[in-house]
Length: 202
Image (cartoon, rainbow, N blue to C red; front, side, top):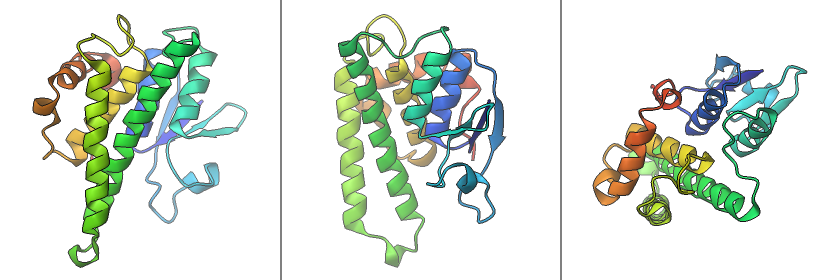
């Protein structure tokens, strides 16, 4: 299978981490979906990365759909629990982390516009979402080693990718001081090969 993504995409990083944790072989095709000649639109009608292209040519898009598929195709290192309540918790944390990422992306893109075209109300909304999302992620983790207790799940992967993206695109946000438990989680994830090999680069 082939993963089409950019090296800065936090959603693409989440998929890459899952592929590495589950030891699923894949080819990486780096693309910039913003370029007019990008092949991404032919693979995903939404024109976004990541896209997982299966051996039969079928395209799977949206990181949450992709990781769901990957967790079922390999028995190695299951990251999504089968028990309904635990599954709900993990997928809920993933959605929360993705929401923080969405707000970070939106604020980053808004700030790339000419200053006179930027919306202060829009930026304020995204920042409010970002900070409240981080607070919720911190509260859900509390003092546990992992979101679900004693083993790493997709919840931890998703949160780690979000925190890494904050470091890349919003280095002025001192989330480590505000949420030391998230900093501890990020530091623990940073020791894993899957996170070391997927550090986002500009």
